[in-house]
Length: 329
Ligand SMILES: Cc1cc2nc3c(=O)[nH]c(=O)nc-3n(C[C@H](O)[C@H](O)[C@H](O)COP(=O)(O)OP(=O)(O)OC[C@H]3O[C@@H](n4cnc5c(N)ncnc54)[C@H](O)[C@@H]3O)c2cc1C
Ligand code: SF4
Image (cartoon, rainbow, N blue to C red; front, side, top):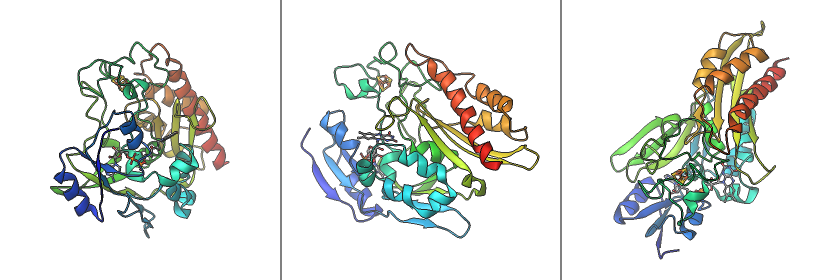
């Protein structure tokens, strides 16, 4: 690990000013990802700007929306009454990740910006376009069981590792940002990028921009929602495939509305818009669920070790929708 200085920000403005003062500074949340990367010398910041004292308030508004400070701990968000009762998929997605100890210190901002778990990214002896632009990618012909099947490029086949983000993307969450040029917001769905030719550019964040909060708009039918994570071990493992879904069915058994997102399959949390469009207005049955899953995965491409994920993703979508349909019975 290289030598670095440590600074504590008291608010967003001081965090941005501190970050701009040092040429190679990074924001520090709970440090559960960043410090690991520093230990492996994958990341070598000269200064850490601690943003854990920024707001971690979780506010339930009268219209049913939630405003979550970026400093909120993963544990607090998963345990919040409004999250558990109105957005159970979010609570379940967080609890499916990491361990209780890690969730106790990990922040919402840090969770969103955690970096891929591709083993070659962490190995300085391997070729990795994400670690070093245009260096090559050892995962394409290497061990790629955990890698992406949707939206990949020749340059990178890594996945985004966050469980929480999959639920947030399904819920149309919006991230609030503050940077040297002022404040702005954008849908979380548009924050992370597909790899293209520059997998080292992972998000649409501008230099020194800080995540200050995440907003979840009201969605009454999200009371019937869930998150299912398929993984190699029951705990402490990242998703092979995960599905976040909320389903609204009318009395005639027709899908009124649906939200669907996938994890473990792409460089970003994957909103399943094709499947959603097919499901709306259709009878909620196994054939319709399967047709929607087929459409969503139509462009999926498997690698040597991960082609099984294509069928796994389809079956997990169908299983989750069947489970939510059962809750309407
Ligand atoms: C053993 C282990 C198992 C894990 N398993 C899972 C799992 O199964 N599922 C899962 O989803 N996650 C898992 N994780 C990852 C864990 O969820 C993340 O490490 C954690 O959420 C990161 O949050 P943090 O606050 O510690 O971020 P940090 O490590 O502090 O920061 C991560 C990144 O975010 C940036 N950052 C932090 N806050 C802000 C902000 N407000 N604005 C802008 N940039 C910011 C930092 O600069 C850094 O680049 C696991 C981690 C470990 C160590
Ligand atoms: S898949 Fe992406 S992160 Fe992994 S080695 Fe290739 S370029 Fe690096």
